[in-house]
Length: 154
View 1: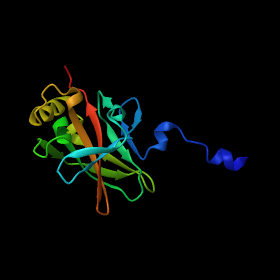
View 2 (view 1 turned 90 degrees about the vertical axis):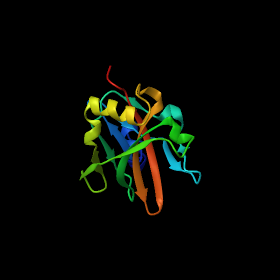
View 3 (view 1 turned 45 degrees about the vertical axis):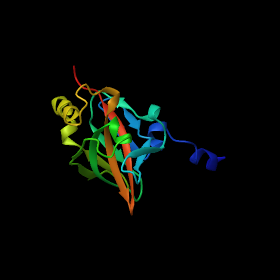
């Protein structure tokens, strides 16, 4: 019986290896995409409804053993259809927070005016459901793109 209690499912936020952290909550990033040979992204885990939209970005916590965060990419939904879609790579800073977890800071996503500028550069000035940010993780020769959205301030 004790063994059953020890393997009970943790809280939903803790069961995900990638958490999007805002000022008020931690949202599991369950959906991810992979780059296809045609040069477009395709969701290979989860669905569009699993992609969260937040008001304010604080950080991302990654605790997937063997996976390393390398960058964050800004792109429009056109990246799912065209290899020529506009995209921008954003620098990240990582900080260990335990044995396997790291916090990922993206300074450019901490200021609403910079998010609005990024939306313009990728061709989606209105932001919304057509503008994406992707945490890019690598492990060996594999790469995953974890999508999320940030609302543009009015």
